[in-house]
Image 1: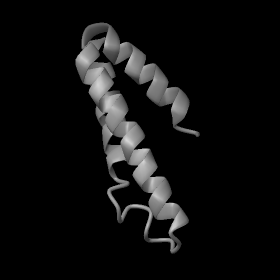
Image 2: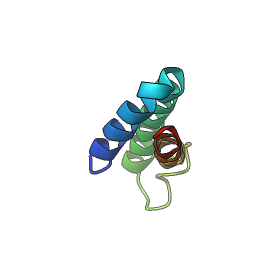
Image 3: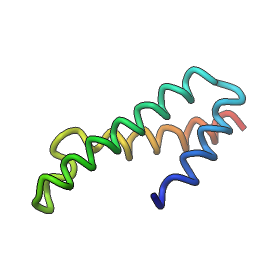
Length: 71
């Protein structure tokens, strides 16, 4: 929830110049957050990233880089 405003903003900024890239990275971020949530509810502090939950932060970082690059 705390990452949502920055992801929305960077998706919007990236989408102005690279709409397909922004859509792909936004979808990948969403999928990564779902995987993170599934790992989180399965228990244990180290299981959040065990099911591929690292996709969310990595795609968020890629959105930040793409938004910076497109400005």
